[in-house]
Image 1 (tube, one colour):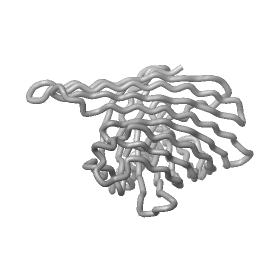
Image 2: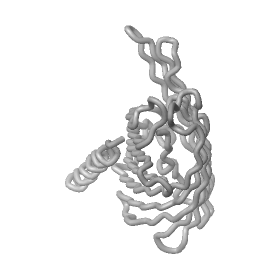
Image 3: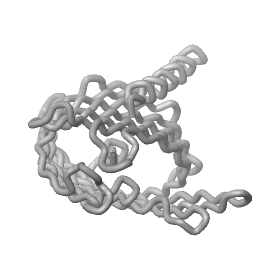
Image 4: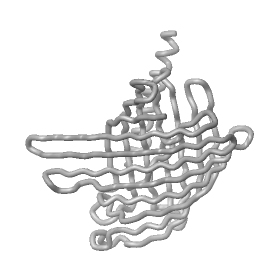
Length: 261
């Protein structure tokens, strides 16, 4: 038993390290793999939030909230999820972001799943007034064991992006792009109430292959009760052609609480 638990925690460390390394070349793409929930037919949901407060030399407050609804009636599965984040430092806003995502899956017999999705997103920190996208594709289950699962997805998507025209510099304020979103999702259950999920996306623009976005999210979830969970999330993002003076890579670490039913 000790050897098996050591193996699980060793795998967890490897996934966490791989997630950081894969995305470290590290704008505002969103990971939806962490949002898949139901394993049996039914309806489920979750609400969560996080707060960060700092005082002293710098006064800082950042709050976030998210909600999700899942519906599963095999072979059909759909979910909708939304999230908002806001932060101020010394009276100045440094974060103002929100998104909503709707996805439908159809599971064929075997390891193959068809996917269709749409999403709306904004992020003032990344100069993003609005990003709207729609896509469809396939998802393949590579590994399905009791402690570990591994998935590979390829989903072409059409993206319409509107940026802050006064701050983007030479970067186009409006773009329409067809991107190929490719992702690898790894999940590891460490115990009955503890899990680790790491997802890496690669999203090149078909017409301009050098324009590519990367996203990695690695999340550790620790159950406090059957319904209440502590979550620790590391996000790394990279944009090869960021607008204005936005950095080509960003790194964020958040802690929060989620209530599920």
